[in-house]
Structures are given as structure tokens and as C-alpha cells.
Image (cartoon, rainbow over all chains, first blue to last red; front, side, top):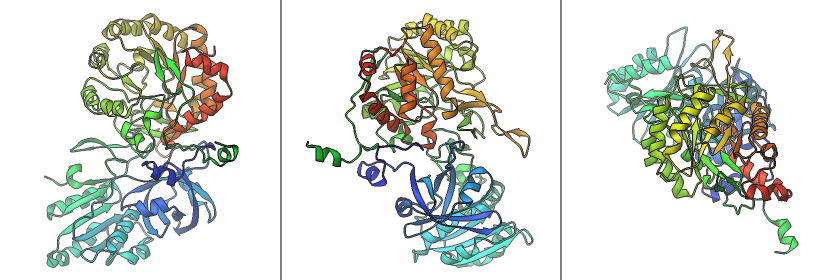
Length: 272
Length: 320
């Protein structure tokens, strides 16, 4: 970003009733959880204080050839520290994976519509692979609520890289990898016990689209409401470019603004 | 204010209201400063959360069609070197929604509004212009340059005969200043510009995006569902600048809004020196939400030391 003599601090934005624009923050930790999967932590009071589960932040490359943002779901917050977990899939993620403590990176956010956690209920956090991070943030948000339980149901290709983070906040963590089955295998296994509790169940899910669709249909058959955090290739990430649309019962919606969270009903995945 | 106070003054905030020192006039319409937002990258609500959009010289809203358009299927965007390729296909809720929501919202804020008009055929454009003719929009911009729709858009803007025919129909429908937005995807942009002006255009804006694409080397297939899209961002800056230069040389008197790759006050100033009356910031807003207002503030500082240029702009004249 070109240097500017004009102030655009977070304090400035807040005092003028605006959302803070893109800003430069300090990286405090970068570690590889399993080959190709990285947890990056940066320090940003505004994101830390305001982010809600399933909201995301944009990160920007320092290379002016690569200008467009890369959106990442926030996985957890510790004081003013914000963590993301992502896979290295291209130029931008590779650059971020090679950042070190003390480096700086530009961020924008938090962005998007979060999971709705208003109800007192047992929340089933059903995640697949790199869809798990937003569910860790949901577990963290639910950890402070006596009237709710968070039951993580996590599916991996191989390494169970996020179990240790889920265990920090969730009441129960169940995980599985492809050698044994998938999240539906776990859901079937847990179902009798969940039914017995008599408490309202709500599914929050994020992962590959076919997995979420299967989870939504599983939930629908059992009368369980499901909220799905969707992914679509984004442009701006804040609602102005209209690149990241998906078709819903409410029309063609922007994932970055109307989502990323949609209900199974909005997506037409509830067989109703 | 004494000198010490002046030195200690906090820097101007991109978020705070500002007293603009250098206005411009575009086809008779006064702009607070010479920097607007470009169509397709501006959404009143999304952008308005970050900065006061009424502070811009103007805002150009996304193309509106007679009825809701769903646009192209996804994937709609791919990064390109120093830019982006997009093929949204003018998704918009239609002109009635625009008249009921976006336009009054922006006018209530005090914004100078350019309504971008989209169509798949001459009848579409005419229906939209008819509805906007008596609206509060300050200017209309006829979009004959979108590369991502199969009919209308660029197919009109690359054909001087079709463009003249369209303008003959639209021109008598309203007294509002009418801008024609030109595509760079032509051999001779001056020929198209001339056709637009002969058809009654009060102003020209340029450039819309350049046709481009990206291919996913894992699959060998285009990344964007529409296969090709429009390239914008800093990569297109010299292309837009040369288009303004050529059209200014061919048409000394027509007001021109320069667009393409502007992400700083310096680049905006280059467009003014090429002969533009004003500029618009487009692609930069996609990776820097406050880019438009920042460019306006940066340009203003650069204009402070250029009284010969600001005097011309204030009268609606141009540097060349």
C-alpha cells in the first residue's frame, strides 16, 4: 500500500463512527501444525475485541503483484492476539506461512455475518479439515456460557491438527480421519446419547461443501437446525465487488456480506 | 493559529469531514474535488461503512438494468499481476430498487451521484434512462463497455454505428448530463469517442476493463466461469492514461473522466495532465477500502502547488 500522510488509525475510524480500514499489524507467532497447515497469530486489538465466530479477516500480500485479499476465518483470540489456521495453497498463503514473529502484515476485519449463538442449547460443531478454525472460535465463545455446551465433531484427512485447540474450549471433542470414516460416522455414533439429553441441539458446520451438505441433510432428517459457514472465491471481502455470490432461497447473495454463515433452510439443504 | 500549533496539528484523517480546496466541474456539474468512485467497485453501504462517501467528488453506482439481473455464475474473480480479472456480469437488483433505496440513501448523505445505466439491448437502456430522467441522480453514465455480458455492453461500445444509434435514442429522453463510458478493447478509441459525442454525449469516461483471463494450471481450465473477464487494477494504469491522452487530442472540448489503475494522488494527477477533468478510483477500493478518499486527499495536496491547473479545473477546463 502506498505510504500516506493521512491518518487512518483504528482510533480515528472509531471516533468518526466508521469501520477501520486495512491496517498493518505485528505478527507474534507462526507455526506449522502439520505439513502444509499453519497457525498464524497477530496482534490487533480491534479484531480481538470485535470478532465473532465464523467471521473472517483479510490478509494482504506485501508483494504489489499480488494485491487481492486472502480471507481467513479466525480460530481463536487471546487478549489482543488473533490466530488463524490455514493451508498453504498458493502464493499468498505461502508468503504468510513464511512470516516470523516481529514481521508485519496488513489486515482488514473482522468481516462477514457470524454464527447465531443466541439460543441456549447444545451446539454440535461439525468441521472438516481447514473448515475447523471458525468452529474453534465458536467453541471459545460458548466456553463462557454455563447454559450451553460445545461438542466438537471434527473430521480430518490424516493428522488431527486442531484437536489440541478444540480441547481448550469445547466440552467434548470427537475426531476422526479418513482411515476410519468421516464426521457423519461420528454423528451417527453420538446420536443416541445426544437424543437422550433432551436438550435442544444446533449444528454449526464448516468444511468442504459436499460434507456440509451431507451434514445439513443429516440434521434435517432429525429435526436439528444447522448453520453452515460457506466458502466462495472472494474479491474485496467486504461487499462491494459482488464476486463471491451463491444462490440461496433469498436470492443470489454475497458470501462475504450476507454470509459466510447461512442456515440450511436458506441454502435449500433442509429438504423442506 | 500560531506556527507551533500548526506543526503540532494532527494529520488529516481519511475518516473525518474535510473542507475541499480544489473543486472541478464536469459537464456543468460541480464536484467537491476531482476524484470519484468508479462503477462496479462502489456499493453505497459497503463503502460507506469505511468513509463518508459524500466527501467524494462523485460516486458512480453499479450498473442498473430495467429488471433484476443475476449476473454470471461463479467463479467470478481471479487475481492477475497487479490487478484482478472479474466477470460479475452486472448483477444488480434493477432500476426500481435503485430508485427506492440506493439513490435516495446517497442523496440524503449529500453525495454527487452518477447513475451507471446497463442494458442487453437498446430498449433496456431506454427503459432505465426513462426511469432515471426525473430522478435525483446528478449525471447518467451509459455503460457500453462491460466486457462480461453477451449482449449490450461492449458489443455497443466497440461499434460506432451502434453507439450513435443508441445515443440518438437516449439523448432526447433527459436533460441530465450523459456520460458514455468507453472500452479500451478497440483499435481506435478516438473513433468511438467521436461517435458518442456526435450522438450527444456530454462527457466521456474511460476506461472500462480490458478483456483478460486466468487459467488454473492444475486443471488446464479457465478459473472464471465466464472464461474471460475484465482486468482492472494498477496493471491497467498506463492503458487508461494513453486512452485519455488520445481522446483529448482528438476532441479538445469534451469533458473526460479518467479511470484505470489509480491508487494514489500522483496517478490521479497524471490523468489530469493528460487532459482529464476528473478521475475515478475503481480497482484500488477492492484491496484498500478507503483508497478513493485517500486518493482525493493526496491529490488535493499535490494541487495546492499547481494553481494553473486548479484554475482550469475550477472553470471546467482541462490542462490540455
